[in-house]
Length: 461
Ligand SMILES: *[C@@H]1O[C@H](CO)[C@@H](O)[C@H](O)[C@H]1NC(C)=O
Ligand SMILES: *[C@@H]1O[C@H](CO)[C@@H](O)[C@H](O)[C@H]1NC(C)=O
Ligand SMILES: *[C@@H]1O[C@H](CO)[C@@H](O)[C@H](O)[C@H]1NC(C)=O
Ligand SMILES: *[C@@H]1O[C@H](CO)[C@@H](O)[C@H](O)[C@H]1NC(C)=O
Ligand SMILES: *[C@@H]1O[C@H](CO)[C@@H](O)[C@H](O)[C@H]1NC(C)=O
Ligand SMILES: *[C@@H]1O[C@H](CO)[C@@H](O)[C@H](O)[C@H]1NC(C)=O
Ligand SMILES: *[C@@H]1O[C@H](CO)[C@@H](O)[C@H](O)[C@H]1NC(C)=O
Image 1 (cartoon, protein in one colour):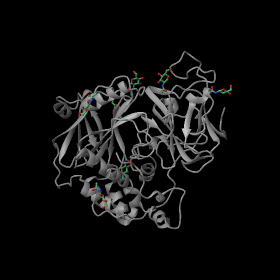
Image 2 (cartoon, rainbow, N blue to C red):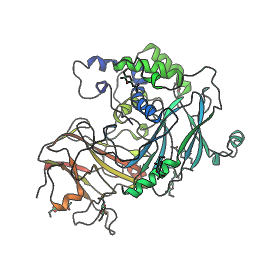
Image 3 (cartoon, protein in one colour):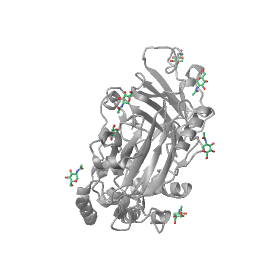
Image 4 (tube, rainbow, N blue to C red):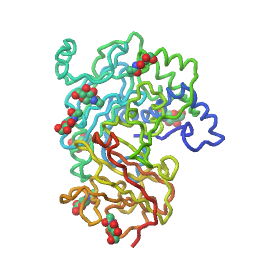
């Protein structure tokens, strides 16, 4: 799983040198806004197709990331993944979803532009079983999920429902399926259980229900990678030319408009909407409704493809960034400094929800440290100041608790050890990623105050 590292990070962001000025100017072009997500799509899809030896096959990732793992940036140590690049140009697909008990899991379906248009998983209490996943070249079928159990009055669907649980209609002829299963406690037996689930999942091809009038090009490495320019703007145009004829715009009635703006190549520059609002001071969170499935908001789609490629819709996960005091997502810590994250209470989560705070170094890889601890989470043995466990301990009032982030070579006193998340040795640039999976409505609606963060001298014995 090669990652979502960015090829033209200067299309956005703080570092705008003279050399990247032309790149930035190009970014004002709607063609580039529209096609931008195809760049991380290719970065992600080429190695995935290569490893799985083709599209429509799963590659299962069996181990959690460690500091030595450099395939993806800002990896999480909460879930195991399976990856498949999907291609409907010559087939429909059947996806088998295994019975997953007592843990967060999701089968997220993304279109070629990284819209997360369907999630089958624990948040939605989804039916497990067989789903037909298909693409309608005529564009007449509404993209999304049709459950057989809810379609008794749809005569046509009922006839098709023999032996399957539902239909998933993809908006584009190519896509990504990225199942995730949460680890409950990280012990080897739990990994085994997830491996078993991965082994029970599956994809196979069936004859396409709807034939296209025009032959569509199958998704191959050469289609995505041959003679591709190293110039990001040229690259986006090349990829749009190769991919978009096989993957029409999401909103079909919008095709004319998109085709026109792509042809005319005019556009305006504006800020992707982010909404830093109380009670999230010092925290930056994408407008929730916009996260994951972008409709015709191509600017937001581009921004998220840049910042958090393959993000899930907000009912599955929230990814707030701590931005206080520094620019962007990068923080800076002195060799003898610490950040303290004061959580007012346990984050309120829905069924099987979990949270984690993960530290990455300047290269966005997990921080190497003697404890091999890459994250603190609801599954860590974090404690209140009286030493009792925040999670899994005796009943305790839902008090505040503090997490300590300080360099890996500055061990704190013993009573802090279980609440210590090591930052890079000697300090320097690093990043912290807070993730909430299966957030509660209260959390999504901003009714929980985000942690208050303070920078101070390191805590040493
Ligand atoms: C959740 O399930 C309902 C049917 O129970 C379905 O209509 C809806 O699309 C699902 N949500 C997602 C995000 O897939
Ligand atoms: C799923 O089930 C849980 C537990 O029964 C319930 O709290 C939740 O509201 C359900 N979610 C949906 C989308 O039906
Ligand atoms: C899953 O499949 C792999 C490869 O076929 C096999 O090595 C492994 O033992 C299986 N694991 C489980 C838990 O079924
Ligand atoms: C993709 O293209 C680049 C540049 O031509 C080449 O170095 C690389 O090996 C190609 N990747 C694959 C998987 O073919
Ligand atoms: C689809 O596109 C049309 C034309 O641009 C627009 O009027 C309509 O609001 C769009 N529908 C959705 C659901 O985005
Ligand atoms: C938490 O503590 C228990 C024993 O008290 C230990 O077995 C377990 O491995 C610890 N978990 C973590 C994530 O450190
Ligand atoms: C550790 O002990 C110190 C001194 O008693 C106290 O101020 C601090 O809150 C404790 N930290 C934790 C995480 O228990």
